[in-house]
Structures are given as structure tokens and as C-alpha cells.
Length: 213
Image (cartoon, rainbow, N blue to C red; front, side, top):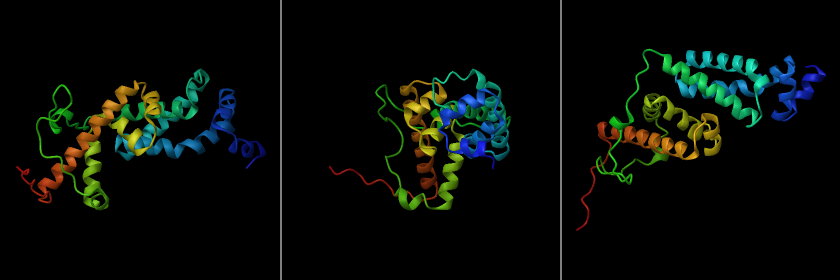
């Protein structure tokens, strides 16, 4: 490792921007080292497809390389990169001919104008700490995430799987904070309904007890 490369390893992300805009290849290599794994993981979570994730990774860093000169630094470098990566991943999903998306409205219970649940099964969920350890349930969850409409999936992945805060997700997806919260809420409900349905179909959901009169 050259002295120049060693010096770049320890600098904050913001200090890479100048060298990147100047066309410094060492700076771009350092950017790849820092973000390649994160971007691939994000793309894999959004596309649910290894081949699409690899393509999205390549597309994302090609865009970063081409557009770094126009980066206005109104957000952090990482947020800007994640925004490009999510867009690249979403494009792969939307272009996939066999991508079958289940409507949120079909899979979720109905709600009134105050968002109160008016139909559907009782609010029951198996003990998460035990159930989520089971391989079969993880597979059900993975399939349910894949069936989320892509825009909802992106919010869920960034917020609940990548652990980003709501404002950062809003910045990456160029949405308002309330829009992110609404999509996340609906996505969580969709996934909850899917898992409840799985447990009911498997005969593992206990019958609801009548309310005391």
C-alpha cells in the first residue's frame, strides 16, 4: 500500500470528495473499499436477486464515478451514494419481466378513515424471539419482503434492515419524512399479515378466545 493510499484510509468520507472530483484514482479505490460491501448488501436486499444486485452495484459505482463532479454536497457522501444505489436497484426490479408484486391492498386488512382496523383476523402474532429463529419463518419473511411493492420495499430495507434513521431514508429516497413513516407502517403491516397468514395456514395459530362478558 502506497503512502498516499494509507493517508486516504484514515480520512473522513467528506475529505474524499475533493480528490474524487479531481479524478484521483486512489480516492475512488478507497471509496470502493468503504462502500462496495454496503452497496451490494443494499442492492441485494432491494432486488432479492444476486445477479440484479451485482448489476446494480456496477451501475451505481459507474454513476458515482461519472457524477461525482456534480455532487453539490447538500447531503453526506454516503447518503448520496445510497441514493444512487437504491435507484439502480429499483430500476433492476422494475425492468424484471417476471417480477410479480402483490398489492398491499389485497394482502392487508381494511382500515377506516382514521386508520382503525375494521376487518381481518384478531391481532395475534407468535412470540417473535422463538419464531424468527426458525428457518421456515425466515424463508416466509424473505418471500414476503420480495412481494412488497418496490417503493415500499426500499423504505423497509433502508429503515428496518439497514438501520438508517427516518430522515436519512427520506433524504436517500427524496421523500418527505411523513411519507417514509407512512410507507414503513404499511410495509410492516403487510409483512405482519403475511406471517400471521403463514401461521394460520400451518395450523399453529391458536384460536382466538371469546371476550369476557
